[in-house]
Length: 282
Image (cartoon, rainbow, N blue to C red; front, side, top):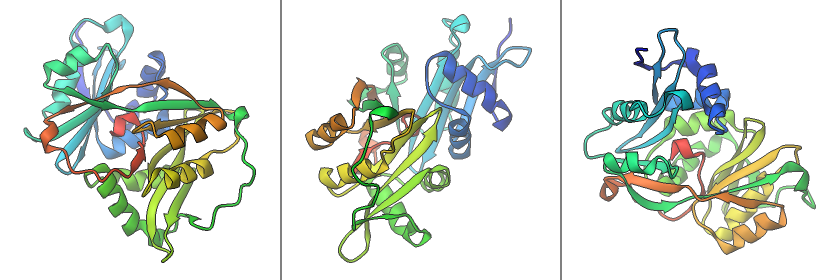
């Protein structure tokens, strides 16, 4: 059977979501739409048009994020992942840094392309029924996002992430179920946090804040008591944040490794990114 690689479009979103579910990943159609709005997705198709592989790349200025590398079980060991990844990497400037979050199975392939391990993220989840807050009122220093906050939010994200990702960020705010902004005494934004409905769960992130106490306060306000699970991927295991998560019934599920190609060219991060948006977005 001849398989050909294609640039995937919005018409392929249902197939991409099905491909994700087949391997136990939780990317729904809304998230696939966000990926296509922010980056480029390639995948192999059968002569009948069935999508059997995928790989996505999202360009952020002088760096990129690689993700969504999936191959249907029946089509593995044919070099499809390698082919899809290569097409995506060919779109990235030669010396630009590329990051991804790898499964154990995927690490050998990424090493072939020059990636090396550079830390990890910590995935925590909790069943919605276990969550409860004493009060739904926001603290005085946390406000609902307003359009006048945008320029400050974009700058905060740039400094936290290390690169400009305006296109992605704008789409994420449109997607958001809840958008919160942390303000200082002069009513200036100094942090923010989003929550997204995502494949029957509430996904929290990105979260930026001046310190872990402020980050924990944002996360606590983003937690909602719903009959679904809640997920957050932390950039570090802050004892303050993980203690708070434990009080709300969260448990650590996994520790995916962050891998980077050309790590010396990564943008400078200021240490204020406490939770990522999603692994596919870096």
